[in-house]
Image (cartoon, rainbow, N blue to C red; front, side, top):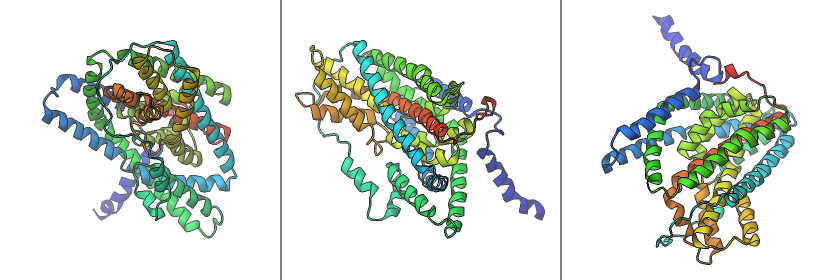
Length: 435
């Protein structure tokens, strides 16, 4: 009996250890989440959510699931990023990684903004009926608040912000860089951070396995709202257009770029590895909630090593919000056409592209609803009677969030793989070993 009692904790550790390797799963993670999504959709049709009590209960459960999913994000990002920066500096790969990350950041924003404007100019969607709603509050990007959050009075406050992860990422990067200056002196701290990184990664993996059941609530909540959005039929053309653009980007554009830049013979491996993150991103619309899924699949499926996986993926998730820019461009043109019969002048088109491109880099403090925030700011800045134009799309907020999050997740997945290949920090896994 005593022997069994002594071995019990180690047995638990061995069970948790399985989440660090992709070889011990009896069922793929994406299958679990796909089953959860299907069950959630069925629940939305089978269970009556017309009553306020039932509806509020559903939204409460979905919110709790999101909160649980984001529970370990800050500890995971902060410890893993510190260790990743330390290893990159030691291996003299920091600036090479930073360069390629910057190229991916800028290029993805330019590319998706260009695709979005061409899609909406080629396809003329029906007008949205003008409403008499007026804007009661002004919407801003919160840039000043974001800068303050980056540099609070105490650096430890950055680890308490579960929304703006850039603050924790910056603090962790500084720690990692300082550790690399004298690794012999800081060896105990490096070992501690390494252990904590593995601990929080394991915790995040366990949460992901549990939340495959929670996906039922998220999907059910999304389906209930989606039925309301499409009930009038006004936003169906917009949904169809964004769906087609998403398929083009996911199936043609990004795989082709990966094939050309990385000489990847099977670029659809990345898309297959991203099934779970894409499901989570689309139906939650939350970038921070999706981040651990991308980190895990980037490591265990795609094979990106931790020194790149732990730094590049969080940074791109925070700053590479090109999908939000694409959706914002499409939305603003729809608003323009709903208010005016005149074609959009080239100067206005250039203004729209430039601001959407720039705003995509500063949405780190808006993990959900970034596209709608950009549209709101664009309408306010443009003026000329368009100040309340964003209210036309407020009923479709769910759709805008979903597609923007899906585009952003795709960008992070393919972008981090490109950076990993260019810095030689990818260990290719065979598809049967994907989680």
